[in-house]
Every structure is written in structure tokens, then in C-alpha cells.
Image (cartoon, rainbow, N blue to C red; front, side, top):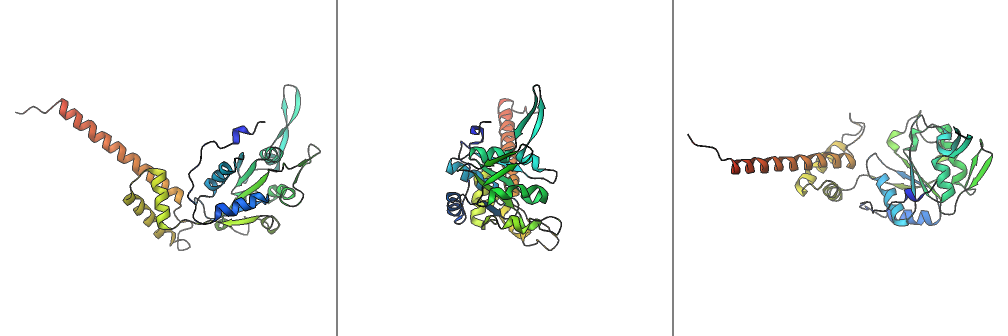
Length: 255
């Protein structure tokens, strides 16, 4: 499988809010596994896309879920016209080819699934394919990145300490009001006054977290709201323009 399809060719928009870019570059130079910690919708996935583009490395993303098995990550034997054939999973493809493998919201995966990444995240940098009887040595450019929302922690759903301690962590949070307003304006094309109002609502809602609100309004939700507002404003302007044109072409006839 060619990994060219996983290269990000257009620069993703990402507004840095600290030294996270420099921290990630240092981690990648050492091929250190990285954990991105932060609330949902704060820019973790966009950050990974931006860094993959900046480093000119393929990015293979896996959206983790509770039904995901180890075979979904490493691969499995499948039947085809010629018989049984092995197909690499996304983690194996990344390890062989030197891509960045991003496991999004890894806490959603079962713990018996996530343990398969352990040999890749220490000095061995190896991936055993037990069903195939093969030991894959990771490419020199391979890196494993996971995202982790600490707000999802519970006794039933959390990462093992043996998994957490294999990663260097970069903490994320929602940006300050000025930066978040700038992001909303860029993503949605709304004016500054509208963006500022949306950000004010979000900051007030986030203060209610733990007081009847499980999760605050994310930057991603603000972008969605801004996009709806911008589209509504555009549609309203177009309808007004159409009405004015109609009146000009067909003026009302007086009694």
C-alpha cells in the first residue's frame, strides 16, 4: 500500500498558543511517542495534521472506539480469489513505511487492544504480528501519537499507567479569548463582533463545567456555530438582493 495518499499536501490552519510546535519537533527528532492531552474540540487533531504537514510525513489516523480489536490495528488474514491473504492494519502500515500514526481518543479503545502498542513505544520499536509469525521493526521515521481527554477518566474507562508512562505529554486547553476569536473568524469568515460574542458564550459555559454541565463548549463547536451564522447571513443578503432586483425589474403598479 502506498503511503503517498496519507501525505497532507495543503497546509492546515493551526494557530499556536504556546510552545507546542517546538515541543513536538523536539519529540519527533527523538522519535518519542507523544500524548496530546486536552478537552474535546480544542485543536489536538488539527495540531497533528499541521505537524505532519510541517515535517512532510504521512499521517495515518485511527478513530478509536470500544469495538476496535487488536486485529483492526495490526492486520488480519482475509479471503480473496486466490485464497487467504494477509492485510496490514493501519498501525502496521505506519510502522513499515515511516508514517506518523495518530490514535485519536485512545481511551475509547479497550485496554486489551491498546497493549499492542507497547513494544512500539519503548526502546524496541517493534510490532509483533503473532498471527502471521512476523516481527516488524519500525521504520526510522515512524512515530506514534495518541490523543487523550482527561475528562473521560473513570474507573471503567482510562488508560493504564503502563501505557501512559510510555509517552511524552503535551497539554492542550482552549485558547484565550482573543486567540479563540481569531480562530473562529478564520474558520468561519464571520466578523469580529460575532466571533467575540460566540467566544464570550463559550467562556461562560465552560465556567459551568462540573456544576451541571459535563463538558464546556469547544472551539470546534464555536466554528460550527459561526459557519451556520455566516451561511445564514449570506443567504439573507442574497434573498434581499434578489428581492431588490425583482422590484427594480417589476415595479409595483399604482392604483
